[in-house]
Length: 109
Image 1 (cartoon, rainbow, N blue to C red):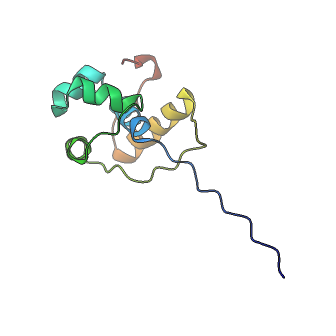
Image 2 (cartoon, rainbow, N blue to C red):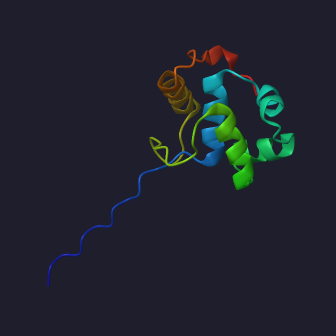
């Protein structure tokens, strides 16, 4: 009998909340500005960003349509990315979209 193959560990992914935070930081906007621009409620947005609730599809679609992006598989460095890793992802997203580089000092919530 041959040896069992080790299970492949699925690559870590940024949570939807992390993706929203990355998007917000990449655009250099506060939560309030993003809410005003998209019409998403403060409660929905806040709970989603901290991972307490997964936003409904229509909410993600509003954000995706407004910022011309998709919420899909975004590889993360590991299961619990640090704030610096999230900022790095925000910088990569901004660069790939042709947006101005986010300023880490703008860390507005």
